[in-house]
Image (cartoon, rainbow over all chains, first blue to last red):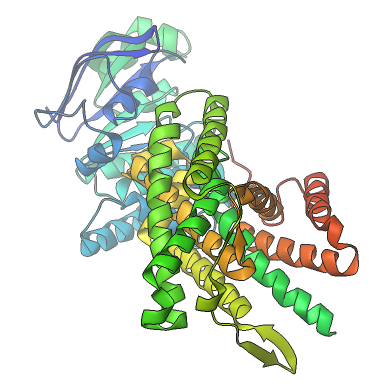
Length: 238
Length: 301
């Protein structure tokens, strides 16, 4: 297991939002996390990234506990996130955004290689590298958010709603690139509302409801599971 | 013509001082969205520390005038910068997750503590910078007189501003500061140690304010423990004028306010100097609330 989340609990003030999450990811996998709004998907990702402190439970990365590390230390462990809503630095240029993605990287050659690779994945970013990120289209901002998260050469990439607000054709393009990124050896955890497209991409999936994992299976099995179809794939045979 | 030129150079010198103080407001606001109301008092502390160091170390005697002022400004910047970090630790850091109003009240409290401490240490009556130690040479530019102190002050503030601008725009750490100002959470996800960025901002801002304090002492000769209030207010106006949170904005706003004020004092009425400055603030808030350089790039959803 590259990532092993054990009995993770999170409280916001007095409100418990995660009631003991168990989640395991093997190296090289794409694991998707499905669930309605407020199920705790983003909280789970943000807790793994160190933005949110768990009240109890363990997060093991390569067998080492990381749940007490601050966010910037977790980036050094090679876990990065492209957050929900993209959160690009709007008044900085595309190039500056990418440079910030490599903030923890000391090895200049390695950074140049990452940059070259990202421009191959998203040629659009290369064209717009001196433009302010806030002037990009939604799809381009998502490319930038993912590219930025790849700059530090992560082993585990967390993607929170990468298709949010994108036209279907753009979403498909982003998902195709996610597969490419995964095939190059990056393990991916994908949180998505768009369950069908996510399950087609992923190897395995988890379903979350109200801060609990209620289901866990291979992606193909989930695609055919009547409960999942009913709740997340828009009804029977749709 | 001579009066215009005199007022222009004087306005630029005072404006440079406003700009340096304004940078402290704008940098802290940029990262924490907090108006550091104790910033004016840090400026005053700078002026008093400058007085103490100038009088006790005899700097200008040992390394010459320019060198003396250089070391004086540098030492005061370092000291006031450290006080700035301590201020953040004591008054703001414990309130980081509290409602914003708590930090504002804490800032006002810190301001009172600072000004009263200065009064207790240095006494309530105004103090005078030892004029005998400072150069009084007058330059003639196109036949018009410019006192050397005015040139030194303008040059020092320009050097500090250009240095800060290059640091913020060109270095890795500077980019990290800009990123933390835009979105702290996203900055953390980049691996930026935001706590360290905040600490750095609370060093740089007060350091520049402290430098401005020394320059007021050098420029006017006289300082008092309440002067941080009016200078703070003017610099705050300058920061709003340029667009709060915007670093070049604070520089432009400060220089502009200095010139407007000094022209107003000369051609309208000296007594209305402060009123003119705040009239500019009101105008800006009505016509362009984001300030001259304040920008707002629409976020795409």
